[in-house]
Image (cartoon, rainbow, N blue to C red; front, side, top):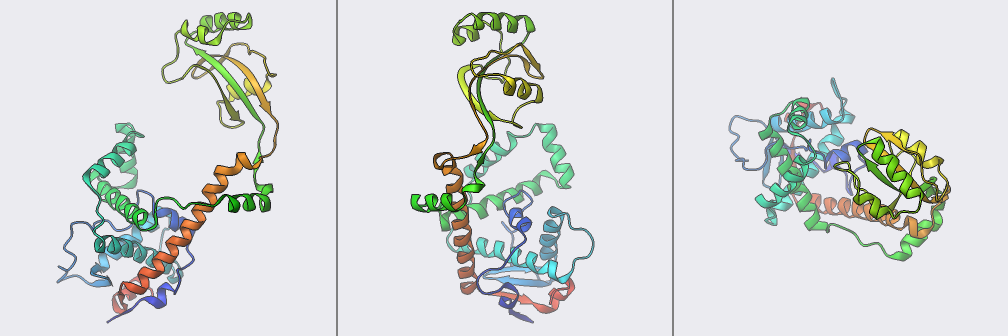
Length: 329
């Protein structure tokens, strides 16, 4: 028998394990094969959920829960309390996809290819195959999951907007009431030349110490591929650099040129141009961080309210007899 699932879901959204929330936008997305399926051809299959016009079989639901469990590293039998939030999360995903179907929101092939290129650029072919192997999936399965992740994101973005505007007064008020959270570590602003050989680096150091322009020194040495040598100085804090570089840079005084420093990247000659002691950030330094934080909070509330509206409007029914096989009430 099918019944309304609202007692399981709550009225205005539900508290969720943050790990489950993060799962939504990872590659291990719930719902393996919604797209392109005949959702009503289940003569020999048990229907566990009906969400709008979508029918979800018991096997599909088990697969969805299994994927979330794998992502959260949950092994062995799960208690009823652990299954319920997963079920709510899965229903949310189907509600989003149902909204997309109603509003004819689709993922174009170009959108998919652009996203795929960005992801694949982060992996060598060998690393990509290793990632698939660790996830115990083939490429076709991975692609289906990626398409769904992208479609869900597109639906949410079109429904809510990609970014929530935060008024400056709210940012200022938040900064005043949370000022202690915005600490600034010790920072150093430096510039450098990186060469292939120690001999070149020693020559650069000698000429630099004698007052030669850095831009001229850069033009005359063999540089390391992938490392930009520039007269423009950059800020760094401890923990951002390779250890030998960090030790050298943070030991220099302003205006001092280092001895030649060897690192895995080559031979460095470094000048510190400014130092900033540890302390608290001012509003201008904290602006982007606060705006991002408040925007995220506002968008999460919009998302919860939007989902609550979908739950009220789109019929969600559950087959209680089938769900007993998942040990949920």
